[in-house]
Image (cartoon, rainbow, N blue to C red):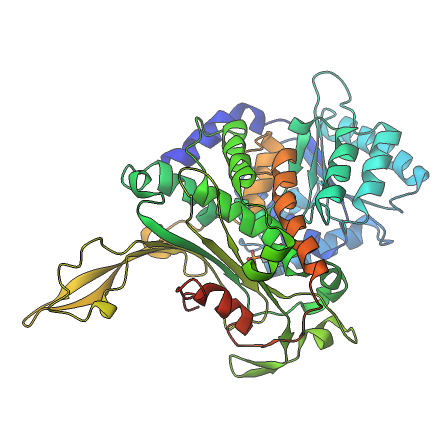
Length: 510
Ligand code: BG6
């Protein structure tokens, strides 16, 4: 365990043991089955859960507790990091409860309330509650209002606590995000609200802060004087799968850029926080979003590119186009977005941040490339072809093949003098023997421990929406996009190439 991890664990270790009931709304859904319950089992396996703990699943599916346990066990077998250990499973499954009901039915909420009381008496969970909204975004307001009306979200007594975890997407534009914040704040104080962005739970994303601020050598060159531009790529080879219903209402900008990409950008661009805690780290992220240059509608046309995939080939397999995947006749929903962003502050003035994300691209990769400026004086111009003199690039590979590499120029041994790029490469897999916890393990544990550092704050989420709502407005005023405009398995639409090439730069290869 490195020292940073140690500090975070120690800082919340006294709260780690708080007894509690985790109430999962949407417990029969995909997120709970594939992510949340396997992560909880992994935490149970590693003895990280409180001793007095229960999970109460609440969903519409008319299951009894045995059915719930059966589905959970199948999900664990398929998705948990740890294999099923019968002793761990027995103890874990003994903490699982389930009740079915409609989210807007007052009677169901009354039953929920009395079930929580009886779990408190049976398992000693002391009135502490963590409510997890693992439901479609349209359902969240109903549940939050019910929690308020039923007063079950209020702490049972002055020693107990009540927190809420809200999944993304958090609203669909600035106004709806504000409204959702207002509704949540009518019931939960901001310090009890945990807006989840699972990218922040990834080890490689958390490591951006350690890399930047635990090493002395990078910070002095982390600015406009030395950095030419930054590229953030979140590429997926998968299509929209069976989430077409959700995705067609959302699109890549709402699904990936407003949250995951904005978070990566903030961690790369932020000033050093004064402490490693939720307040200081999030203060600095908000400053980045506030400094992001707003785009006028006319600029949206020149600073962004959108795409939607047509049928094509990926890894030797023929795959359908978006409309077929999403089972719609036609659609103007974007499955690809690229944009050029500027952060108007002293550190980053005039340094473009190019970001792109898309479905059905040639491969799955999330990486951040920091391209440094060319040298100011070409010492070797008479002996080598200067077009070969590629600038230094630092690449942070978030996933897969997690690691960090630095590409720099080196002399090829022998005469005449030749110069060629070489790589220094750090690979997590080779450097550490222990397997990283999943993002959901980290985030669930943090929420149980009351550590909100890796969750987004109300002002942060609104500031990110402010920029993205400007883009959505700009798109609305533009002529409709001619979709589909990139083939599955290609590098994305030509518009995206034109966007970066008009600045004399190129996208990095996937
Ligand atoms: C989710 C998006 O938030 O992130 C999905 O809704 C996307 O569309 C997923 O596929 C990507 O997550 P990861 O961890 O696989 O990069």
